Length: 172
Ligand SMILES: [Zn+2]
Image: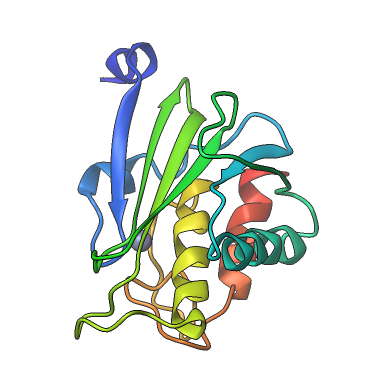
């Protein structure tokens, strides 16, 4: 099992509303090898909100995770890429890894709320923070009140202490 894991690049999909068992079992092992991470933001009005969401993680982690931003429709060298889908309810993060290190992550942000409305910034930002949490290696969800790493997030949710501890453990 271990051999298979280190020799094949696998892709794990983590959804906002639920996540795979596979994701859980690798929770301890996945992290980026070095910082800063190169992030590709598409030219889009929502990228400003996305950039703020990335910056929240950088600040919360006191630069244990850090990002460099590129703005382009495609950036082949970027480690984290982002796309926005207007008519989708769920957001998700897909990533590939090898030898316990994350190689590439893609975050797709869906803009529809469950009742079919376009999500406003107050809701979108915690959703973005949630997906970025997955992209930096926090695979599991938490039950901590108001944590952006809860399975479902709402306006006003933020990066809680337990997530910061997890980041500190990953990137010490
Ligand atoms: Zn999630």
